[in-house]
Image (cartoon, rainbow, N blue to C red; front, side, top):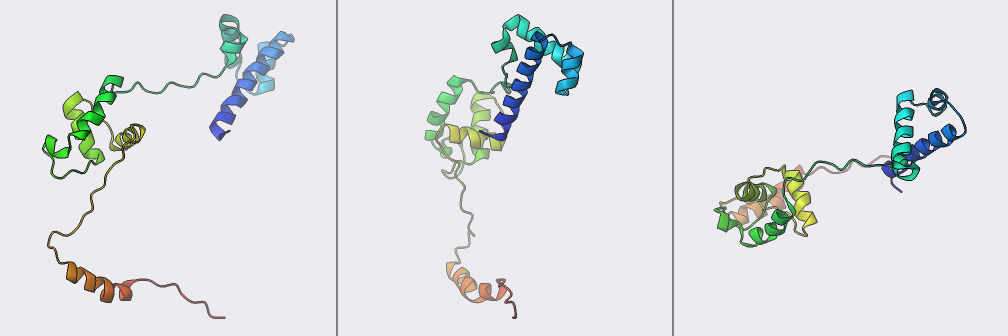
Length: 164
């Protein structure tokens, strides 16, 4: 059980305990003092329990979160749009980055999204973000190899050896 779930379950137990104490004849102020909450909170809990029933009224109700910007139909269309390739949208190369997917979503559906959300969206759809490899365009592979073999060892930090 995660910490968040345990905390919420504890709070639900506290609400149920307030109901039990009220049934035992305690006043709302005494219940509030015993549970370390405000009298208003106890009043709301008991009113909900009376209106909706003890099980439903005192059960935890997690926040639903914000409404999605893309509809289910638009989400279903997204893999088809991305299968066309990045070049079909005037982008250079075939790699799909979060920014590129965001641009396609913005052009097609008129919806803007944060790149971090687009990454989560792609993972939920079973896709992954592609990160292009950035290489020098000069094509000096031999010079790069020599640098790695000769210059890099001199620059690389090494662990200090402890003297006994």
